Length: 248
Image 1 (cartoon, rainbow, N blue to C red):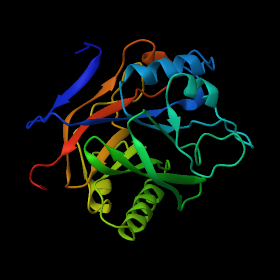
Image 2 (image 1 turned 135 degrees about the vertical axis):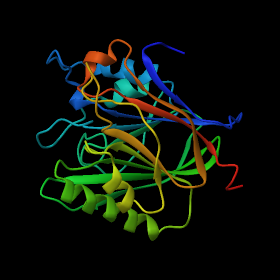
Image 3 (image 1 turned 120 degrees about the vertical axis):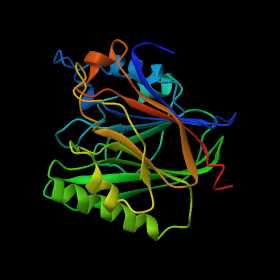
Image 4 (image 1 turned 90 degrees about the horizontal axis):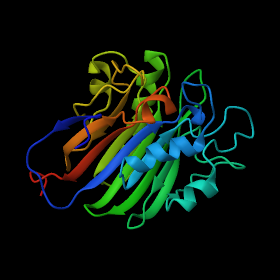
């Protein structure tokens, strides 16, 4: 255990787990105002995740090329999942997903979201060490009304799909106690997390995970070891998942 990680432990450990992490890259621009994709990738690799969900992974202006270059990602052994993004973008509306060898993609899609700001979410169906897993990556809006509409749109999209253990992961942009999100995200439950924003002195749980009943969180935390404290205005967060014993 690294002392720089904030950990939350849960009972009922099992041998088969998968680690999912989420990180708002801030377009690989750190608190020192330097664009350092190599530094961002160093943080990503330190998480030891098998599935990596990213936000603000593309540069701001059209054609929105990837802030984290594809060749750099591939050189470190990651696979970039395809979500139909134009040009050199890494994902969809800045959302992207990377997987390690051993994680097999069976399908991907993107979900258009309502709101004043351009927003979207991504969805991947994966084969993992704990079995089939659906991972939804998201970055919600700054205004609560639209955040709730966006969560409702995601849940409606998921209701049209076959049942599958599901994780919502990303930057929820919510500074409250999360009660409104909980009420809107029917069918998933948010785990207790660790503060991730702002990176230098985290107080807000903006970056979170929500799980369907088939899954349990064995451990979770935020990663603040150097250079995560300066590589973005957010710290990355992670969770170790297993199948819920209650769900069989």
